[in-house]
Image 1 (cartoon, rainbow, N blue to C red):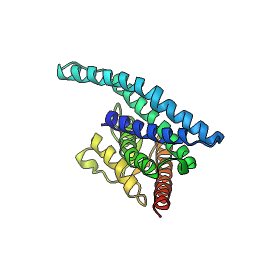
Image 2 (image 1 turned 90 degrees about the vertical axis):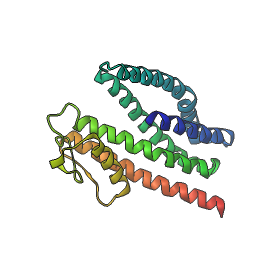
Image 3 (image 1 turned 60 degrees about the vertical axis):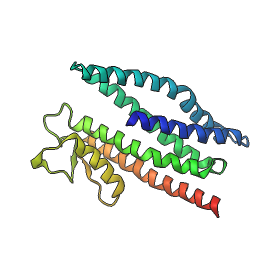
Image 4 (image 1 turned 30 degrees about the horizontal axis):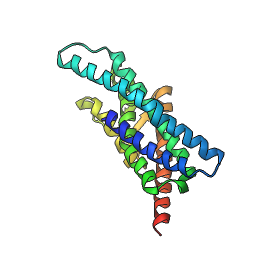
Length: 210
C-alpha cells in the first residue's frame, strides 16, 4: 500500500512542480521549491521505486516459498518510506508559498493523498520501536485506547496513528521513554502542520472558485 501511495504522491508532486516551473516569475523561493520537487519526482523517485519494487518482489517470492526473510530487509524499506515521508512533508509545505501558480485542486489532492501515507508510515514507526524486539509492548510508547488484557498487536499502532489524526483533542499515543516522547512530539507537531496546510489548501481552492 505504501508503494502504491508513494507512486501516486510522486505524480501529484510532478504535476505541481510542472505547473510551478512553467509559471515562475523568477522568484528565488519558487525556483528552489520547483527544483527540489522535480528532483524528487523525476530523478530520485523513479530509481528508488524500481529498487523498492524489485525488493518487494524478492521478499514476496521468499515468503511464498516459505523462506525466512531477514529483519533488516523490512527495516530498510521502512526507513526509505519514512525518509520520503519527511521529504514530501517539507515539499508540500514549501509549495504552499507558491500556491497562486499551481492549480488549487492539485495542491488539495496532494494533502488528501498524503494523509493515508502519513498515518501508515507513523504506525509502522511506533510498531517497529515499541513492539518488535521488545520484551513487552508499552515500554517506548503507550496506547491509551488499547486493551492490554487482550494483548497489543501491530494493528493497534496503526489504529492509534489514525485515531490521533482524526481526534486531535485526545491523543492516543503517549511517550514513555525519552525516545518515545520525542517521537510523539514530532508526530503531533506534523499533524498540526497538516491541519494548517489543509486549511490553506481549501482556502486557495475556495478563492479560485469565487
